[in-house]
Length: 233
Image 1 (cartoon, helix red, strand yellow):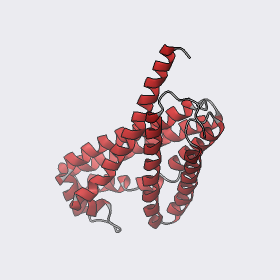
Image 2: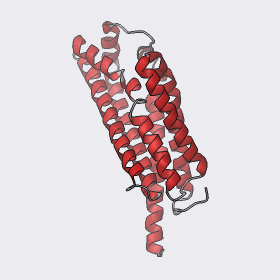
Image 3: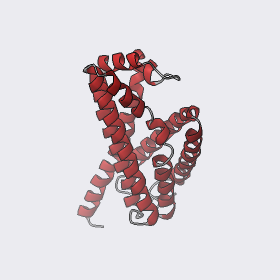
């Protein structure tokens, strides 16, 4: 490999690792906002069905925070997806069948996140403008994200990613491949349970935290070895 090619590979690896680190941090910030704002947290984390008046009041009071949160969520999710697709490309499996399934899963994931962002924006805007019926409908649709996420996007992404990493060049330690498969199977089982009972969605939150840690750790590994395309497993 020429010096220019090595430099290009290093920049590519550095930016890839930066996406893997920044994405989970932004998502952690997004999901941590409700814990820092008690009134908002009591609404989005409530076990029962909140009243329309509470949805409208909280949405109106925190409409700017909700809008900023949408940007943080969308940007964080996009950076994570770029990182995962970059890993597939770097391993040489981007054009394989598992690689194409990974792309399909990432597309579904981004589409789902965009849909949630639309509903959150709508909830915040209609609540601020005194439209209780629209705010209620938007909030109810937004709240279903946690049930849909583990059914299709999450297991598709992580099971396909595990297959790509297992068959391609070993760019990460082997434990990352096994953990990706574990996360994918876990999401599949939780998604099946969530389709039967909403109570299972609590487990999806814990597994989502684990997937963020996986991406963060993989991103740090990519930053530490930006020029390495073949590493010991």
